[in-house]
Image 1 (cartoon, rainbow, N blue to C red):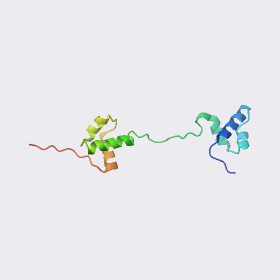
Image 2 (tube, one colour; image 1 turned 60 degrees about the vertical axis):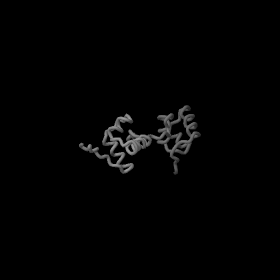
Image 3 (tube, one colour; image 1 turned 90 degrees about the horizontal axis):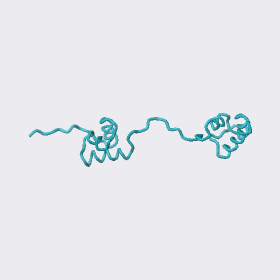
Image 4 (cartoon, one colour; image 1 turned 90 degrees about the vertical axis):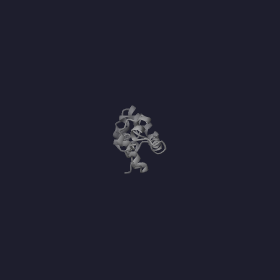
Length: 116
């Protein structure tokens, strides 16, 4: 038997009505032609049912900040520490170097001061 993945709005309403009259989730699942785990998951938390759960690390630097890092490195000729201070980032200097190296192929080199 083929089961759909998520409950439609019609099935959600039908599940709620059957829950209110006291039917079990197994009986409800048979009535709406869904798996009992699907019905149980809906009944556990109807408000958040079907919401995408994001997993993984949340990036600390978005694409807009990466663009500004690149802009400051190329156009303003700033060092990684100056970029960090300018943008108010809470990342390490090595992370900025990593963005520059990976995204645009730049290498942060120490500025050599000439002696006079």
